[in-house]
Image (tube, rainbow, N blue to C red; front, top):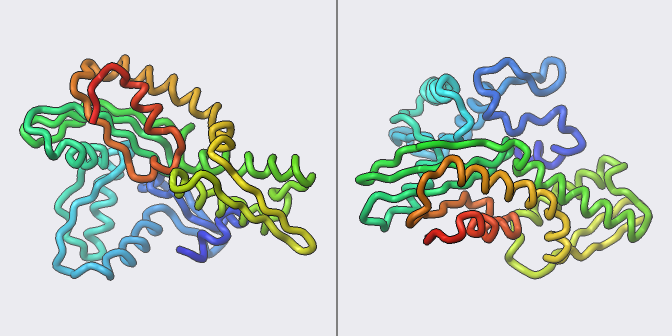
Length: 272
């Protein structure tokens, strides 16, 4: 997996990534005899994962909102095929909501926000007597984690063009290096006020400093569009904002301003 990640940008046609939405389909990755489908990729991943877990372990899957019931059944079948004792599954939104409301003694409403390579998901989960109920949800592919990384990659590339008239996206090696650094930067945003990005090739290298102000400019357009979708979802899908909990997937901490945007969207409600 690490080797695949190291050339995921320059050899994207050879890398099977973000395959979960394609479970049960005939979509293929690769070239010639090396082709694979999502089902086989998942089986390979699960075999590697469960070699690190005692064989008698029973498990339940926490799965994203966008999967259809037949895809969930297929995932459980693949797991059972390799000897995993599957006790069922639940949506990752309900799992996050349970964690966010575990200290609540009464029925609770929870707005759950998740993001992966397929899209950003909003879910309204109600907890009654300790049991989660997914009331409604929506997925926005236009705000996938991959697109936030691409936006940051292009922003840094344009900064390079402005400073030294060189586009790092032109050559595969520097494009790959830029993409990987953008991924790393996005995952560590909020830990320090600025970040270094180093781009180099034969006879040329350049270091750039990316500040929090840069990041705000970079993502301003995406945030404006996301704010509209958030307000629409909350006003049309959630009937009450009384004592609402807010549950965020861990990787949302890597998008600057995301938490404050969500709090603004439910402004006027008490949140936790």
